[in-house]
Length: 481
Image 1 (cartoon, rainbow, N blue to C red):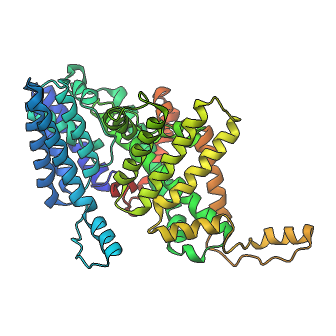
Image 2 (image 1 turned 120 degrees about the horizontal axis):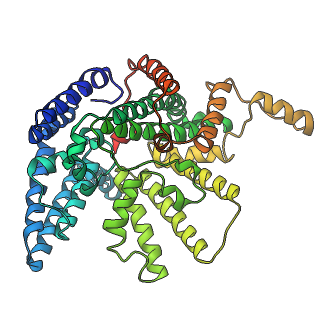
Image 3 (image 1 turned 45 degrees about the horizontal axis):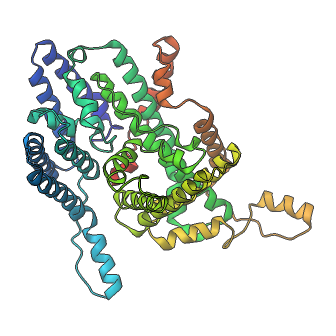
């Protein structure tokens, strides 16, 4: 079930909300949690019922292992149990997400013809796997509180954060479900939740899906693009992904607020970043947190030596790339960010600096270039797009630009043919860039939120125009990961 669908907005969400608070008002706290668990399982199975058994099995196994780890005291036994738990999670993720990729790679290198399994990626497997690995590690460290099974299930599958994050930590949400004050309807949270949900819905269906038209068209015919077209296509995807993921984070946070649950910040104006480290403190914040706390620091972090620090940073970004997708394009994307992060760490260690505007420009252009690998269907397509973007192929200017250059230089140029792209696409890119740099983000809007007539009219307009687009159902991009 999609957040941007009639079923979710007008049927599922109101029914679950009403049922939850009715049970809480009847002093049936456990029943209210079970109601949320059942609703979340229905929400998950609405997509593909066959994978309901998979997530239930994963939850039950991890709960059993976590319970043992939190109660056992013999470290010689606990460590192997933790290792088994982590390996089971990684194998489950690896089987569904990476088996065909490995088979394709082997076929390519040794010219075999192993048959691909054609496995369909279970929805949210990357997210609930990392979430449960973190829980196992915390259980090993004796940091969990021995939650009951329905508490643990709610922590894993609470539907606002289930499909595409944020990757929540048990301490962040379970204490909120235990708080008796959160079992009553809060008009402040209802109004704020609806406001942020509406902003996110508008970002998705009106902005991200508009950029998707130009991005999809451009990548579908990458080899035929001309210079300006290639930049419009790449920037369209850069902003499509931004508003798509930002919109999802807003809608997840807004839906959770209706239940008086505040999810962790996962998206904080990443295109305002002045360096690559700053970017990763703003983009998919909870993924960066997981990789830092549960992989980077155990590897030694920055405590051993500068060279070891650089290696650890690179490893983290390779894992991030591989986590995002089973393909060489994602591995290259992760490697690019790893190299950039190592360079920045070396640069900052030596006390070097640069003007903020230059730092922002270099960071944004690097991120845009790296997204080409993230979006492309193959390494060859990505390289073709980049060659055109940097003028090595198909360097033909638009007719108006060519005419101006010819007038002042006397050099005869070939104008670009009629393009699908228009001044509207360029104008929207400029507006989007200005908005993500200078306008307050959703988190800042939440902090400043005061229910009044202006905001009521504002969100009603956003809801109205967004709902009109719900017939054009499109998935969120992070559903693929």
